[in-house]
Image 1: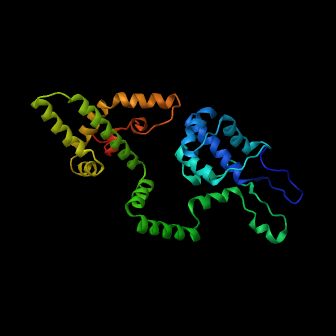
Image 2 (image 1 turned 180 degrees about the vertical axis):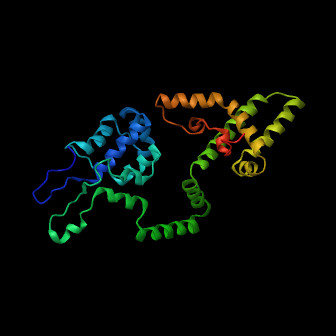
Image 3 (image 1 turned 45 degrees about the horizontal axis):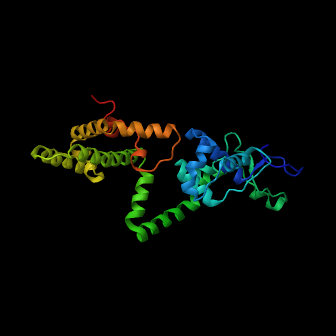
Length: 271
């Protein structure tokens, strides 16, 4: 049963913030296609301890049963990292329940103005006009104090889907290094020549090199991406199989995903 017992003074149903996070936790798990047991395994490195299947179930039951569990801030951050969702995503109200009041609900007339519907959490997730400048100021401070690390984090967060392609390109470059060195582990001038050519291609696939190449020689960039994907195909297949089996990523090749080279280069729809 969603919401708590209602008094005569409270006509509208209500939700706790813990219920809202619990709803989104379950939604994220189902979107990922994980069982509760698989979710337990995936969460462990982010929580720093093992939350067993019963613990996962307890979180999810918080939304729609009388058995409630408080969810703390560290857990929400772990959910964000594990499911690759913004922290604010977990505070969006459940679909169709936006008019439920957010607890605590105040019943005296003088303070009733503080009772707000859950749908208004959207404004807090995105940033209210009066609070947006405070966020910008804090980001500016981080750029000044933490330099390149903060800049790269902002770049990654704000640049959209195209930057995720660059992550995949970087993973492909790492994979190609291993494949190339393994193939060329033989003596002779021919191997040395091939190694030199491969190194040139690998330099082109560094983040900086690829950006320049994408802007100056699209055909060469397309060649590198297309040929590179052929070489890393076994690793892509292995990574996909691990995800289907619900195995936790250990980084590196496990994080490879298919990409469309033409889409990366903005060539879709062009001859």
